[in-house]
Length: 593
Image (cartoon, rainbow, N blue to C red; front, side):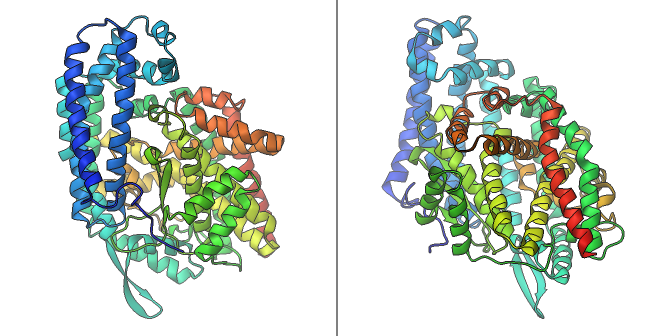
């Protein structure tokens, strides 16, 4: 079984004529559209014809650019030292910045149309892009002048995006010395991070200490990158008229503050139950003052089952089929067609992600698979993202961009299928381990995500005044962890460098990419509850819901499943499912003490 992904479906190579020709075509088409805009968008005459033209051209350009960028970016993620890929990413980002003129001009022109709804209803093409057009018109409120927008777009390539690439390079090439079975080895950061799941407590602690020590090599540079990125975000948000980066994120997420606050307040209410779980886990592991960070993800029970990649894929496909053949067949296709890059290696970025490739109706998945059940769960999670993309392949590309909070719905739904299946097949001892692993994962998404939200909120507040030092960043992170975890963690052993580890902080376009994970988990649990109630009849509705995510607000998508996301009771009901698992875990844990 091939363990590296294939990108030849996008382009055979950077030197291939098809790649070079597409770069030339895109640039030429930009020039042609720019000339058309200069001529045609000076007036609002023939608005339907002009909107149809722009929808068609924007769709074609977005598809071509996405294909070019995907090949370059994916090549770079598995080899941070690939100079050709890096140069290509930079070149395409420059082309994308030049597209700013087109986007700004169209959105400003749409803002002049007082009867947009009436016009849209006269054309099937426009009706199919109703959400895209109306949302584009709303963006006009936050646009600067055309010249200013172009300047900001071009400057971001040597500003925030450059800082992002630097930090990615630092983290992906960081080799960490650690003693493994009496021998000193140098391992990449993802391998060290995966040791947090090791069954040997000495390995977990050594990995934690080695990781924290290694970050000292890149903390000053990472802090400079973080300050540069967040400084740019604050400046641009203010220039556009947003009250804060958070408001900008909520608007882009198609979510309102009422929904966010309802979810956060329900999460805060649940923290004491999670802390009870952490203390009990600490007690089982022999800790008296709460759980030290190095044991936060420790596997529990005498079973520490390891999976080969073949076993993991077979397990996932089998249990996906219990939900639907369509989901299982999709997973099989991804596995058999080399869409997945599996193992950690030097130069490859850490973590895991799915990259949907709408132009070729496929996806690519990056893993750092080492054989734990957590890795199996991650495989299911990322395939869920891919299935979400597969449900959108027949939509126009302008209707496929869904907001961050809904981005985690299909992934966590898929993950839930696998966890529940594993619990059903398990012995009592295996079930104890899997149950604890599931709760631990939920804790990461509720408690740790809450700490990350608190940290980023505090970071923006501090960065508005001055650049934030490494020492201050560490302090902010530890304060956030203390508030979120409370007495569940031993405060002598926190993770002050988590701000380096989480790549989301280093993306100027993905601020507050923390609460969407909590939204995704709790929303997916609500959706899964509907599936349990309604069975097979819900499967098609689930696919329809995923198809709707690219052209609806969060509230409207939730309504399709009969959910009011502004109700604190909904979030409480989803959290209650996790709390029940925690009580079950504590009961089983007490039997072992």
